[in-house]
Length: 266
Image 1 (tube, rainbow, N blue to C red):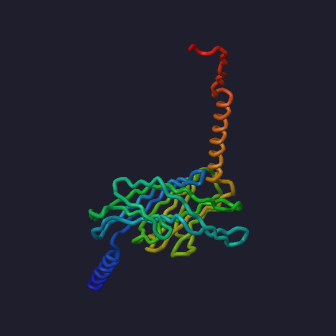
Image 2 (image 1 turned 45 degrees about the vertical axis):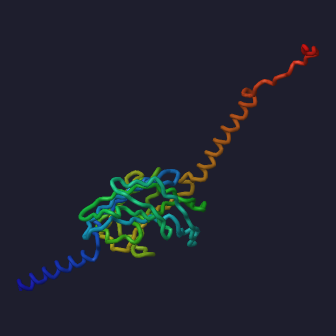
Image 3 (image 1 turned 120 degrees about the vertical axis):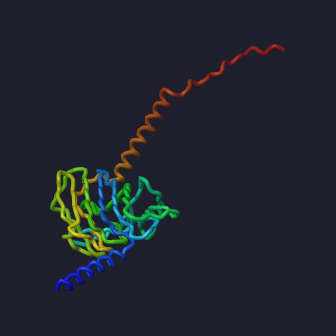
C-alpha cells in the first residue's frame, strides 16, 4: 500500500510539472489599481508578477480601445460603440513599443536583443479617456480587468477601483468566465467609502476574463465634451476681452497731417 502511495505521489508530481511546462511563463499575481476621475478618465496601474519557465524577450499586454458595450436600457439590450483614448504610458525599468492590433493597444514590453528568465515584475501605468456613452439613461463604469489572450492562468489578483464620489453598492457586479460568460462568483469584494477592493476566489484559467460593471445615475460624470465646451467658451471670452481692450485702449491716435500753404524754398 505504501508503494502504491509513493507511485501516486510521483504520478501527481509529474502531472503538475507537465501542466506547468505547458506555459512559457506562470502568472503569480496580476494586481490592478484604477483611479476613476470625475471627468470619466481612468488612471490605471497594473502590476504583474510572472515567472518565466523559458528564456523570453518579455511580455505582450493588450488594452482594448474600441468595440461595443452592451447596456440594458428600459428593458432592452442596447449595444453602443465606443472608442477610448490611451495616453500617459509609463513602464519603469523596461523598454517597450506601442502598436495597434484588432482594436487593441498592444504593449510589447522587453528588448529584442535581451532574454529574461525567472521571476520578473512589470508595473504598467497608463491613462484611458473613456468615450461618451451616447445615452442619457445612465452613466456607468465598465472595465475589462484582465487583457484578452493572456498567456497563462492568473494565480492571484487584487483589483482596486477608487471612485470620485459615492455610488450605490447594489449596482456593482463582477462578471467573467470564457468570452461572453456571465459568472458573477469569480471574485470577492468589499467597499470602503468610495473604494472597491476585489480579489480572485481561485486561479483564473487561461482565456477567461473578468469585467467590473457599476451602474451610476446619469450626470455622475462630467462628460469630456462638456469640459471641452467650457474651456472653449472661456477661451472665446478671453479673446473677446482682448479685442475690446484693444479697441478702447490699445489703438494709436490718428495722425492728422498739417496743411501748409507756403511754397518750399527754391
